[in-house]
Length: 259
Image 1 (tube, rainbow, N blue to C red):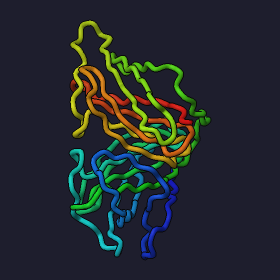
Image 2 (image 1 turned 90 degrees about the horizontal axis):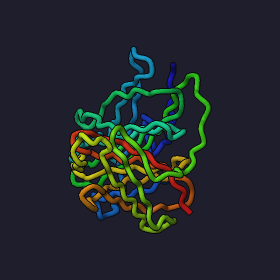
Image 3 (image 1 turned 120 degrees about the vertical axis):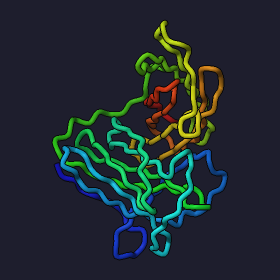
């Protein structure tokens, strides 16, 4: 298995820096929209294990100087989301900070192109988000078309998740509510705990992976949470909600059409 890197050049340096393209954000941890003046050098090297790669992201300021001071936000210094181009695979990782060089190991499950979405907060700045595409070579399974879910109910282990979407339209403050019910009669009622400083993290991507939003949930009842998202364009969107129920972290995928 081999890997092909693809990236865009943001500023003229001897090294090639990963940069962000036109994306949309919906962060709830910042009320300001300060310009992003950082860049990232991505480095990806395979290990001896099939499909496993060591990934690092070195952050630079606009002058090309490495940054080594970062603030903790939502309990981590970096959040890294890994999504396959066909939107069937999603992961949420937390690379370790080694003086401004964030490092982690990713196990890619199958051959495809993958989008890396890194979020970090330089000291006394707002959150920055950078994107990077990589291609894992190999025999690829036929791509399945992403279509909107027809059922509002998802089952994750013993948890029934009811998903309701209200006022879905481009530019609207769309509300998405997740209600959790434990289907095991021997178990206690569902207890929603905070995960990484929030009652839920929801990552949205359009089916072309160009429009990206990250929103945080708030408690709406004893067994439900609500998140608000503003979709910038029409199309099909897939999103993954992550919630800590008791001691169990669950990830709930869902697909909707936005008009």
